[in-house]
Length: 335
Image 1 (cartoon, helix red, strand yellow):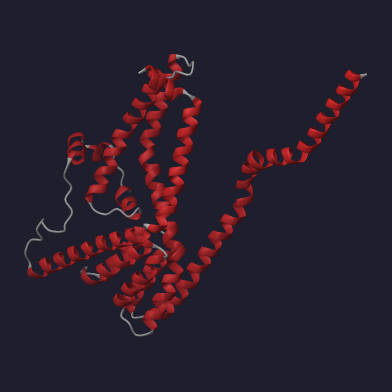
Image 2: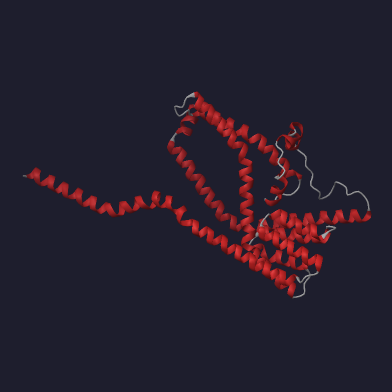
């Protein structure tokens, strides 16, 4: 036990573990580009299952019978579901936006909502237990008891907000990936519509072509095509698209397509205007990010560039001074 504690508290071992984690993250980032096609196939399979479920519900509604609970419909069972139900976490930690946020992060069905409530309840206790174990058993860093208790409580607070932060990061990354390829998808959709294809076939074609650029957008378009085919009201499909993405550009496109379906306005002209507006939104976002870059580079330049610059400039002069002092000392000793 003492050997493990000494190993964990050794700064060199901690530095080695940190370097190992950084190397692993780098390798994982490089491999993510290779695994992108597999991820696309997995998501397209999930969308296909959603399409089959919508088809089953549509047939059940037409026949007037019950929808049933078997087959492809998701079920929410297991340990996390029992914990959430027994502790009534849906009321204790009620968040009216969690369902929409799950949809924006790419999670569908009741199971991700249950997992979110479970981890939001369990993570504070896990963070507090790990922090208390490290501060009270492994290494107290010379802190008084009250400081260690305060750090443990702070870890519990961080654990309470950790699932929300994680979910917000997922939503932001997914929205960024969608909006980077969305103007190009609108241009492709415009070409398909002007060539005489129906809107469902055009959306399905664009989803297959845009998968190499944005897997998330391909998934959203495939789901939109499935909902257009099997939902009783096509307006619901466009509303679901805007709700799942929660971006002004996507909502404007959904509204324009709904108006084209309702009033018979030309869809091609609306898509042309929407594509131009979304390209301008993408350009303005890039300009905003470029304008914030100098302020963000200030600290890295001070920490990493200036010390190296000082060493390169002053190093030769210091070496010459040291050589001169050694030569003078040697001459004085010989005299």
